[in-house]
Image 1 (cartoon, rainbow, N blue to C red):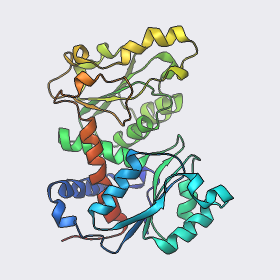
Image 2: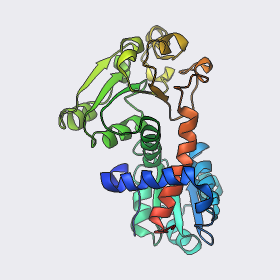
Image 3: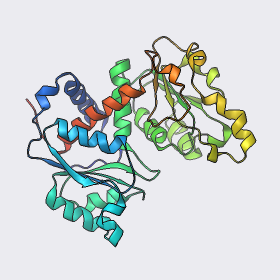
Image 4: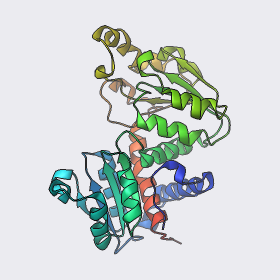
Length: 306
């Protein structure tokens, strides 16, 4: 029985197979409409979520299965003090597979060690968000046709953004990947990512402060939020914030085939005037999240569709 705690739980070959399955689901949805009939997905969400929880539920319903679960710790027996270990043992009696989000890092891993059904980490604190990373990889592969030979700009909060950290870990396994890290000094990528992941693996990267300075060379621009509370003083925030608002003027500096991604939700870091640009891929990205979660459910349940 296989679980998913980290995107690195899959080899590059396994990832390729999963993404190919997701592409087939996109183009042949009816072929998979009854693949999980009689199967149940438990969504155990100990903290609030919109996209992740609903996309898991949509994925299972699209496969003909059913969904049960809870959307906050307050509506589960966790409010009575029940442990994650006990909860998953009970859930294992009711469902065939479980997607778990928890504010404590490592909680889904603990659950997987006690579970008799596959467990998917749907986000654990600031640690991992593997299905977002799978969604990002599927989006890149579908829209660019490859996961190698790419220059990727990561922009915004690179210090605390778990989606950025996971994506770096996942992409360095592919050849000829280069990163441009675009952030204020206060929110630069952590030293352990810079030294233990990028430098240790001889991955070329550069760090810049202004978005305009990087736009012309990017194949992909991955935007994240820059939050006021991350700055030591208001003056620094006011000075920097406009650097990280993507608008038509900045898009005019980019390649014609660059794609813009964002894990969502956005606040004001991408102007709504960019939404109609054919290079804006963030809402497509949300749709790809359903396809990749459908593929993941089929893979972990070992359901083969001929």
